[in-house]
Image (cartoon, helix red, strand yellow):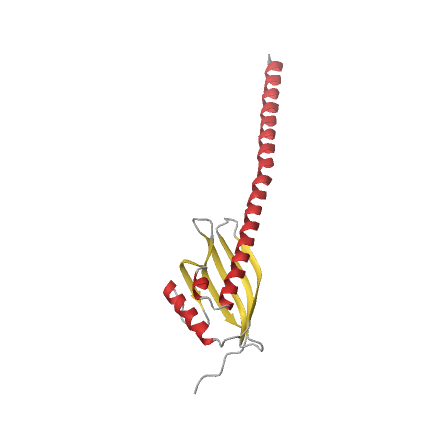
Amino acid sequence: MAPTRTKVGRFITISIGCIGLVVSTLACSKAPAENNNRTSERTQAEATIRQQDDAWLKAIGAKQLDATMSYYGDGAVLLAPNAPAARTKEEIRQFWSQFFASIPAGVPFSYGTTQVAVAGSGDLGYALGFYTLGNPPIDKGKYVEIWKKQANGSWKAIVDTFNSDMPAPPPAR
C-alpha cells in the first residue's frame, strides 16, 4: 500500500504544479495586453494634452481672453511671476486681462511645448515648455502646467505657472 500512496501523492503534487503553471502562464499572458492598453491610453492622453497646450498658447498669443480661460479646470491656480497666486477663475481672468492689456499691439509671441507626460493612473499629466514675448525679447522664460482629466474625458489645467529667464528689473526708487 505504501507504494500506491506515494504514486498518488506524486500525481497530486505534479497535478497541482501543472495547474499552477497554467494559471501563472495565463496571468502573465494577460498582463502585457493590459500594460499595452495603459501605455496606449497614456500615449493618447499625452497627445491630447500637447494639442490642448498648443491651442491654449495660440489663444494667449492672440490675446483671446475667453479662449485662454477655457483651458482652466475648476479649482485651478495660476502662479504668475511678480503676482499673488490667482486661486479663482475671476482672479485668473483678471490677471490675463491685465497681462494682455500690458502688451503692445503686434508684439510677437513664440512658444513650444517641450515635454508632456501622464501619470500611470491616467488622470493627471503635465506639460513643460518655453515662451518668448517680443523680438528682441521683452520677456522669455519657461512654464509648467498640471493637467487633470475631467469626468467628461476632457483635460483641463489645474495648476499653471511660468517664470522669466531674464534678469529682474532694478528696484524702483
